[in-house]
Amino acid sequence: MAAKRKTPVKTRNPDLIRGVGKYSRSKMYHKRGLWAIKAKHGGVFPRHDPKPKAPVDPEKAPKFYPAEDVKKPLLNKRKPKPTKLRASITPGTVLILLAGRFMGKRVVFLKQLTSGLLLVTGPFKINGVPLRRVNQSYVIATSTKVDISGVNVEKFDDKYFAKEVEKKKKKGEGEFFEAEKEDKKTLPDEKKEDQKAVDASLIKSIEGVVDLKAYLAARFSLKSGMKPHELVF
Amino acid sequence: PFKRYVEIGRVALVNYGKDYGKLVVIVDVVDQNRALVDAPDTVRSQMNFKRLTLTDIKIDINRVPKKKTLIDAMEKADVKNKWENSSWGRKLIVQKRRASLNDFDRFKLMLAKIKVSRSFIYFSILHHFHAMFS
Image (cartoon, rainbow over all chains, first blue to last red; front, side):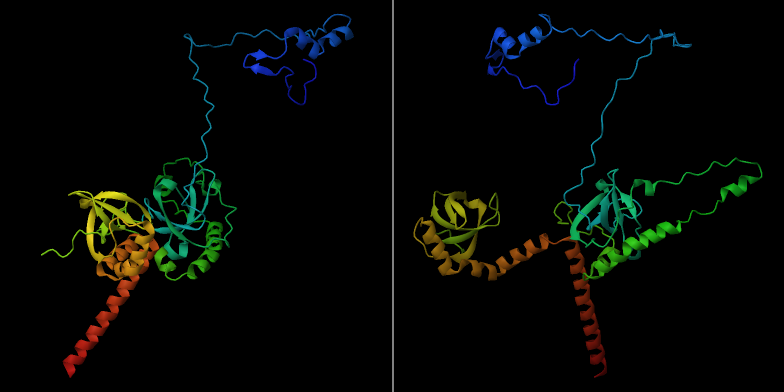
């Protein structure tokens, strides 16, 4: 192959219909200038022979191979799409958690993380829900929004919430009983500071709306006569 | 025994189907079961009587009036206000409002109800005390 063209070739032979060009073979020979190329190289088309390849060592048989042929699994190039966020969930929306330790709590949505999970906070002072990840499927989005402009959530991502890897302890005989009562895992101060920083401006904007603080502090529950499919959230 | 009659000009409420909840005027009777029905914002069409609930309101029109005549007659009889001030109409408006309440609105409503009942309890206890000692 000679040098590659920078722009793709535009055909000089427009289609009359699909499969039939306007110009015949001889006309196209003339249009493409093949006569000029031939003339330039003394009546012969230029030949491009393949370059001689460097000598390659012949492959040695591997030391071990299985007795029967082993099937290779089919290649899977599938890339999962990023989780689609429901249109009703925007930064600052109040969400109702439906499962887990904080079932029924009303909570403020901050942003969607790259894993697809939603980053959410109580705020902690109001209802005890810390900065937490929550799955979209376990959440009802209400139409109540909180002003979230003063909050900086750039630094939070999935790695922030990863479990800390524990060092493996070698079990000695005498240490058996002592190893059982390890000290309780306390939250590092840095995370507490992060929580306070995020909640500071949030709480200010929440207190600006009447009754919103009490609303977030209360839990949601279905009472008698409430039909979830008829409720407007 | 009957107070509301099917007649030309009777205002009725649609209680079934696509136009559920709308007020329409009976402009003609097709046969024993169906009426020709019209409203300012709908196309004139036939409806089974079973889909209609008659109201107390009646307007003064001829058989099958033109749309403009119908609208003018409804304005003259003030159907909209009469309906919205009637107890039936008010109830429907309240129902619609309650159904459209937000989760936050329902919370605020609960707080308001508690406040009212607490002030009533306080007032009734006060009253009781006063009655005991006077």
